[in-house]
Image (tube, rainbow, N blue to C red; front, side):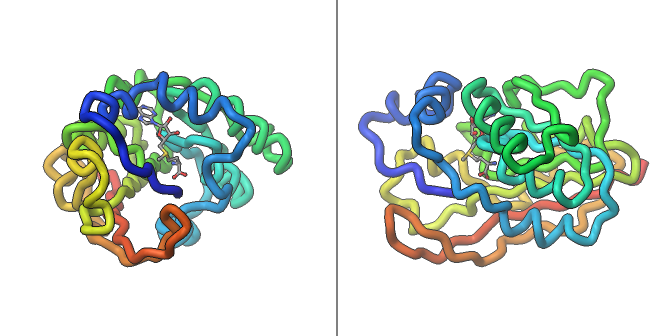
Length: 217
Ligand SMILES: C[S@@+](CC[C@H](N)C(=O)[O-])C[C@H]1O[C@@H](n2cnc3c(N)ncnc32)[C@H](O)[C@@H]1O
């Protein structure tokens, strides 16, 4: 994924977590993300048997397209209608439209509503004010028995010191999310994994906070 750059006031920064800001980012002609699948998704899911998957905060659909190509039946979810429209276009271009569908939803109010998936994944969603703990718990509610929850985000790092306080508070360690999980989950991975990424044209070393949990009951 790309970086967020620097921001003006904390109020401006807080607005960047809301749908209007993302609608604007996805309204232009330029692609925002590379289209490549996220590294931890490839690392953790390549060994799983394909089934049904939900990707929350799917953006332009890079992970949805990769999962569909691996044989998964995938729902891409995001609160941005423009993002979902782009993702649907990319899925059609990749020839996997028939293995994908789309759900416009705010993860902060997510409720499974009776739906369940063999894999629920979320990469770099970063709700504000440490909100990923609650969001991870909500997403866990959509995991089918025997299924997996994979949540990945940025670990706090000095690489991000020029970001707003709001953005730095949105980052998390994998272990922070564990108390948010309901009973009946076994934690398989809770660690920060090193990765290099390009941020504002510069290659930097970051850590992906990676939580993988399996629903046992
Ligand atoms: C940093 S992008 C990551 C996109 C993609 N997962 C990836 O890794 O390339 C974050 C995405 O989450 C979406 N998003 C942010 N907050 C959200 C929320 N509360 N509910 C649903 N989607 C949200 C944004 O619209 C955006 O597409």
